[in-house]
Length: 418
Image (tube, rainbow, N blue to C red; front, side):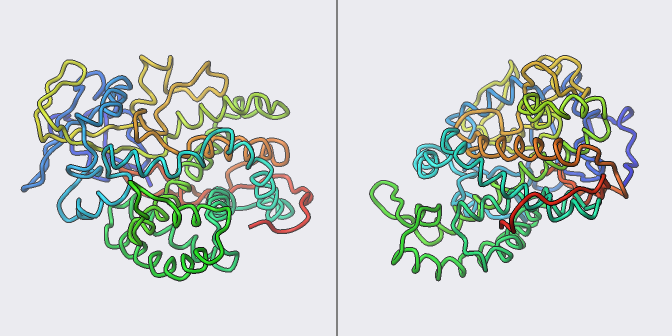
């Protein structure tokens, strides 16, 4: 889909980033660049009784907001752009994304020990087996839809295994995850709450089984976890399960798709990786910078304050545009160029730091590293084979289809890993 907007002539005084037409081709980097230079921060007025918000596009400002939860609250008015006609703030406060410390800290600590880089590295063989199976499933045909056949499947299979979802239930898990991702990307609260209700019904049965037969998985950990000496409620377990599925999926899926697209469009960069697996970890950081899969979260000022010397009044909302921070020229020279050998790519693909910094960042980086190691080894010549489609969203930088062709090869695995 081609955008009808002429971004060079847009009047920033009337710019409204809740208008999805600005996002038809993905994050509007031209607009973000103008906002950084001409209006930082930018006041986004809204119609009716919906409150406006300040848009922040500089790396340092986003980092400052992220690291100050006492001043900038996730719980007060939620973390999304609109507050009317969306998922009620009261419900969002029950999801870890919408919590403030100390409650957020207590809930995050439940999973913090599971997602350490050291423990994630122990998952490498399992992840490589999944990647091997996914490539095996398409390699003899010489073609696939990379998004649907590989990028979507990898993180879903990994998180399903970590959660301990029985094999027969995993296809249903995939459907719920897609509903949660789509709901977040399109600001559709009914779809998201509907998926959570279905998850709650499913967990009623599986939690009873795990209480009788605990296992070494995340579901068992949620069931036995305590906060301030009390077990998690059924609702808290449901919301935790949902956010693990959602957060454990989107970053890897969208960065894998967008990263491969960037490599195909910049073949000289891809050739730096073929036969050179040592270069892939840094390339993954550049892909995360280039794609920055989640576009924003918002906070609400708890008191009169300032960011970057600009006054913010108590009760005003601030929105952090992460793709803009990732392409801030103060942090990355020539930021509009995709460069897998860039020295220390600085990005905000996992947020701006602070208590809400993505818990699963080490897992996502591991999944992406292993995936691109295997892609560059086994199918290094992928080319586009049809139209690339994306979800029009101001929240998720998400491709929905990317057909590719490549030189057919032979299977390497011994069987299906799901």
